[in-house]
Length: 200
Image (cartoon, rainbow, N blue to C red; front, side, top):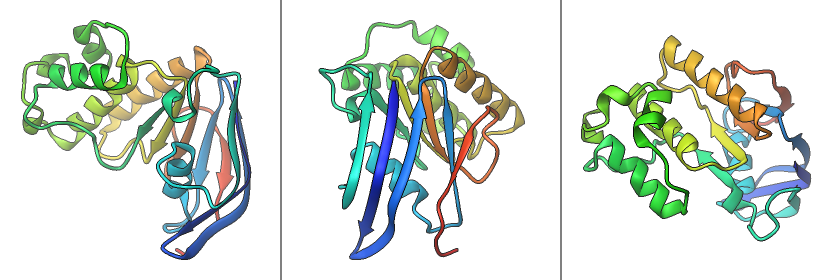
């Protein structure tokens, strides 16, 4: 499996953010997108995920599921943790499984992997910022998708959480998944770097 961008151009609010951008990541690889604030790191992730319209160039996935679109094979972990505060931690996982069409899973096992098994019955509204991030990470594990797009993925995680997430990313890569992450800090896994220039 190979995700490729060729001559990618991004325009937002009538302003060109970047153009002529080339990138590539294959199964088992991580690509770290770096650069100053405002350079377009988040915009690139959103273009890949189909959340923004590409203004030029192309983005394609070779070797994925031919009957699925690229966005259907992607998990996007953004700045904000996509959780429903009124639902319990376990119910949030079930919601995402039903919404994304994933297979049945054992929520207790997924939450254990994410270090949240002790909070399974708590309303998500009671979680700390770091716990909310762990719940978002649990969604990556509950519904398997080969491409992870991660935007500042270690935000709000303490040292133990960062170590745990590095382990989970390593396992995802070892299964043939790929990761593209916008980050200002080391990911904790081996990654090639794609630096985007721009205003700071």
